[in-house]
Length: 498
Image 1 (tube, rainbow, N blue to C red):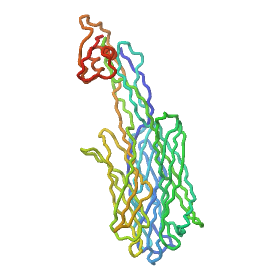
Image 2: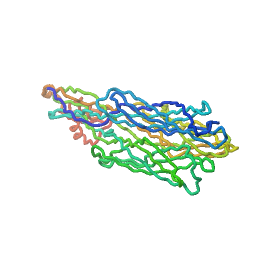
Image 3: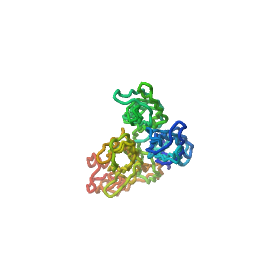
């Protein structure tokens, strides 16, 4: 007789791809007619934006661009000038054909920006960007559950608490602010470059909503009316929520990744700066689910053959963040630091005999004045290492984001330091043996010559294996030996034979 189990759907999200890709783009930039000829290129900076995400069944595409500012010293010896450009990018990820359109999570970071002059009126700008892309689709894992089972059949049932991705989406919003320069700050003559860094401070699931708050950290480099180079930082707080498709348990958590989609900054006549930015909060909701699985079956009265398969679920094992302090030194003569930037690169994972570590490379960029007061720009590479346990059976998704703005001091050179947040998600395709059906033989009468009570050692298989091989039940052995937990391997036990 064959007993088919029922099928219960476990709804979650299945990851089609997670990968960080890099792309380098170059573009020729012509000076506007009103600007003076190029004497020397001092430096270049950029602000990446994501403009669109497209799901195509067998892959996805993320498109955007980098707002670039190139600072140069004019040939006529006048004050520094800045010319801007837009350099587009498009990156595609391929993955196996999916059954449903899903959600895309993407985040873009600038790895480097530089420029050189090709003539007195032309520049060649180059940017290198890294884009983290993830695609997830709705998925139903089929869990086999027993129906009516004869009383003599014993089932090994196990319950596992598994944290699963359950829902993904995004919330687009606008950050606007009119910030007033401090009275002590020189007035703005010309904005030379600016950037915005949205940071998530708090994120949580409240029943049927994702709620998150954070700050957009703005940084501005400008030429003052006295022709000096000045910087100013300010922060704009934001708070958002979005409705979910269903309500989740109090244990549910949210992971929100911000992406900047547009950015504008204008200087007013009275010293104010008007900021307007588009931000998309991309979220994934994780919730713990108790999954009950039948892993084995037998009967002391008849032969039982169990058909099994492996149930695989996309589990989140751990999500953590590490605050990293990154440092670099530029061996150059400087009288003053004017501006700084820090570009973290894709973290690298290393495993060894004594555990693992995450290596976080990055690049510092500094605009400074030499001892004669002339502006100069330089870069220096840095590496930061963070110990982290690495399991070969798990996959670690690691990304790094700058936190705040870098700091620097002049001391026989330029010492630079920056804070970065390292996000580490440990995931695994956890597999569980699962009984899907049973083939039951005929009931056999017990042998009258067989003893009704035997003495056995527990063994390494525990009570289930002992009961299965001796023709008893786990409950009968527990009662006969007054057990409340699994016995020791060498423990002698009274086994009532059925």
